[in-house]
Each structure stands twice: as structure tokens, then as C-alpha cells.
Length: 460
Image 1 (cartoon, rainbow, N blue to C red):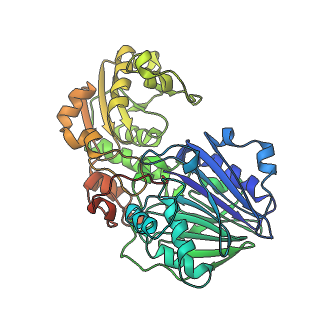
Image 2 (cartoon, one colour):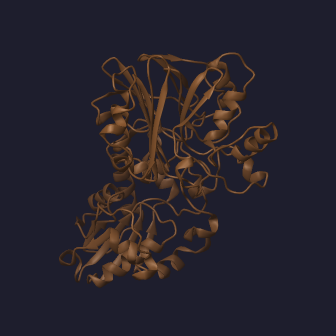
Image 3 (cartoon, helix red, strand yellow):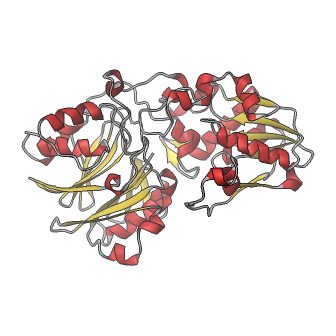
């Protein structure tokens, strides 16, 4: 999962993009980058590993003048760390300097890459996003927009894209609309971002979602719609954005993320009640769902787990401090809330289960008498190929264990999941969603998988 931001038609656009990236930090913590473009079309780039606050200082931003800028924060979805895989990508080709930032995963990246290499293309990274750059640069069509159209028509999978050629900005979203992308205004300038919270931080106004399959040209703040991509049926945005990835203060696809999660929690309380004294959340992503559970169950919501928001990278390996080291670095318990109590613990999802098992151990040590674990989403049984870092099926605990076996593994008194039907009913007013990680019903063709290519490095 990654985050992207663009500003067109604003002085010192890079500064606004920096702030937008800062508010999207939850979407990636591996690397950050910005490309800024002067009015004469000259582009400059700065990329660095780490958080946005680590990657940039005031001098870095000052060296990125221009009225147009795009930014990217990276969370790699299949390995591939390192600065060579950081974005935006900046290249010089026949039509000028081109920069690209991508959120999503292409499901035919390896197939396209093999063909391009056979034709003589030279790749400098292992990310699928570079495939798009080569497709644009090698297109035989005349003109930038025709070349972008040619490239996009060859892609399968998930992509929300920002592209600059000179000082012209292009924004595009794949026909299924897997990953979010929104349009905003900042005075006379135009802003494009993964989530509306990136608009709020710079006091920009939300205008609308960029539609699935829509391609926009933005120059000097003026927005024009280009030829849309061929339709694929009903859009299928990723429901896991609402479950976990998006910030609760964002709105996606006409849906408040906070209200969606509260609805998940309320439905979970109906489907999976527990005889308990209180409800706590696994902070912060499950806070809204836990509030919904408490509301529907009539149980008190308490702060039983506290998250340390200042945990950075460490050189100490977990094996040096016990198997619960990472959990204890991130969380601590409030003994006065938990001691002698029967506790419902609400989390957003369960992937591998190792973190949850460590949390349960901490809650037992704090005196919890009973622990009833509740998940505000269905069992995650299938990997995601569209841009979410869900591991191979062998690593997914629900793919190989029954609910009772998982309950025993976690060492909890009871375990309950929200049903797929219940989850989808909670957000039915917003349309249909991709739920492949829960159901195995993949929407976009899995070309690389079907042709036997190994897992590739996505942009995230």
C-alpha cells in the first residue's frame, strides 16, 4: 500500500505535496519522494528512505521549486526495499521529462516486463511501476496523451497514477477502481491525493472522487477529462481500505471510513456476542469498530491497550528480547482496566496471528480473567494481488486453520469473525467491492500468476 499526492497551479507546490504526504504516512513508511516541475518543464527530484519527516528538511523542499509537483510514500507489497525502488520515477524521454507515482499492483507486470526486456528495454528497479514508464516511452503513437493511453490500455490490475510530462499533470485510475484517488481545489490550484485527509492538511476542498477508468489532464489548475479507459463492468474498490488502511477521518467512495468501521463493529456485536464486562480495541485501526461493538452490545468501552506512537526502526532483533518483543515495543496494557475483568478485544483483521497471540499474553499478564477476541472483518484466507501486503496463502493463519484451531493458537476463551455478508451489507450503499482476500473471488485477471511468474515487487 502506498500514498500519492499531486498539486498543479500553486506556487511552491512541493511544500503542499510534502504536507499531503505527511497526512498519508499511514499508507507507507519505507520511503518518500517528491518531483517538482518548473513552468519551463524542468523537473527536480528528492527521494529518501524512511518517514516523510526523515526524508525531507526545509532545504530539501527549497530545492524543489515549481508550480507542479507529485509525491509518493512507499510500502512495498512484495519485498524490494531500497532507494532504487522509491518513487516518483523521473526520466527524460522524447516528449520531455516524465515523472510517475503509482499506488497499486499490476497483475501482468512480469509478462509486460519480459516482453520489454526482449525488445531491449533496460530496467533500473524491480517495481512494476517502471513497466508503465517504458510502455509510455516506447509507444509508437504520436503525442504524450496517445502514448499514455496506449500504455494504460495494456495494464491489468490495480493502479492509481500521477504522471507529469513537463508541467502538465495526468491522473488516472484503473477501470475497477481498486485504489482510491480524489480531486480537490486549493484556491486556483488543483490537488489529487489518495485520501481526502491529504486535502484537509493543506486546507484544500474536496471536489469529487476520480472515477474508475477516468484519465484527467491538469495544467495550471485547469482540469480536463480525456478518453476514459474501456469499462470492465461494475467498479470493485477494495473493501480492505475501509477495514484497515484508510484513515478514519477520510471519506472513500461516498463512505465515511469511521462510520463504516463503526457499522462493522455493531454488526459484529450482533453476530458474535460475548458475555463480558467491557470492550477494548487493538489501537488505533480498530478503535472505531470497538466503539461500534460497545454501542450495540451495551458494554462499556475502555482503554485497555495503549499504543506507543513513537516506535521507530530498531537494530535489536526480536529473538534477542523474547518472541513478544515487537508487541511490547508497540503496546502496553492498563492493568487497572483489565485486572479480574472479562474482556472483549476487537481488532480489524487477523492475518498471521503472531501479533495477536503476543497481545493476548500481555492481557493475561495484566490480569484479564477472560478474553473474547472479535475480528471486524471475515477470515483472511487469500493473498492480495492488487496492492495490499497480504502474504502468501501458507502464511495466512485462516487459510490453514479452523476458527477453533485459531482460538487455541491465540489462547483466547472465544473467537469470532464478522461474516462476509454482514460486512458487505454494512457498506452496500456505496456499491460493490473487491473482497478477494476474504472470498478468493479475484476481479482483475491474474496474468502473471497464471503464467507461472514468481511474485513481483509492487509499488504498494
